[in-house]
Length: 143
Image (cartoon, rainbow, N blue to C red):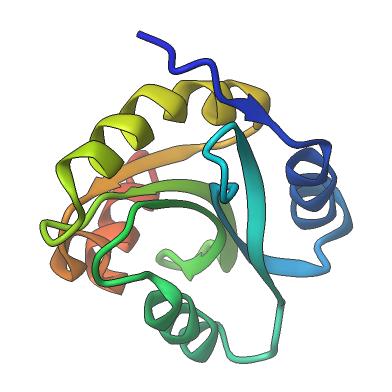
């Protein structure tokens, strides 16, 4: 079921910067104040320390509201060197209001379908589900 919420053109522009330009490490998306459009809430440039970048991303996840994130997840698997996978994270914490969760769930597909090239999708309701090791396990499947 779709909520009718539209995806802002800024969302796609930021995603292209992350995917093709490799100038961003992550993007957080959320609903506009009037709940009619998905907008960019925050972006962060890629730094040299992937672990610090991921910690900063986790700190940006709100404790009581739903957001979506796209993260350029960098990891090393065996002798194959560094790998990157783009992860789509749907964040709906337990403390979020029911109405916010319902709107986020029904709006997610509009954003997700617009972001071509996402390799891994994570749905999370608490921080353990987006912990580095949990996401690493999903990203490294198939290697």
